[in-house]
Image 1 (cartoon, rainbow, N blue to C red):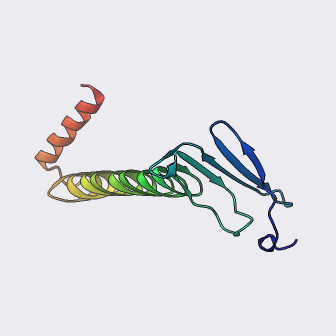
Image 2 (image 1 turned 45 degrees about the horizontal axis):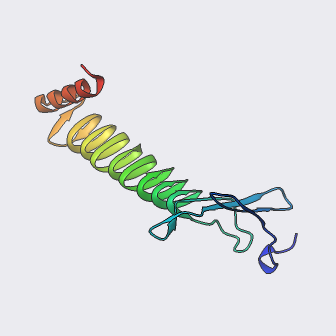
Image 3 (image 1 turned 90 degrees about the vertical axis):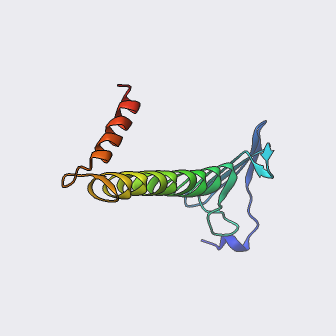
Length: 174
């Protein structure tokens, strides 16, 4: 197979009312696809979607948009294997306000590893309120917890018990 990086790439371009699709099918059956919406906000497309490896560069294109969706994504809302945004969803989700993923950060983070400022939940979590198997925070509900107010199999701080019972009542409507 020839080196695609040295050739002019013949993309299939499709203009739609909402945006532009740019696609390329490799001879091996692999697919590169990219969608950019026509509408923009703050100089970014409202939606940017990427899939596959760009034949011009041999690399993945980072999806950058108000909503970015791709293997690598950044935006106000970012969805991807590795994502960074105000709200991030992905295996590695670096969120400013909210992160959900295997490893997640944010003011609120949910994931196997949840590094949060306010609320973290997962297998390992931090936050002012942390719920996990292993947790660190001010109010902690965990199998093993560190903090001033911990409710665990070994320790039942009365303030932690009261806090988490009230929290459960609030969310369960009791």
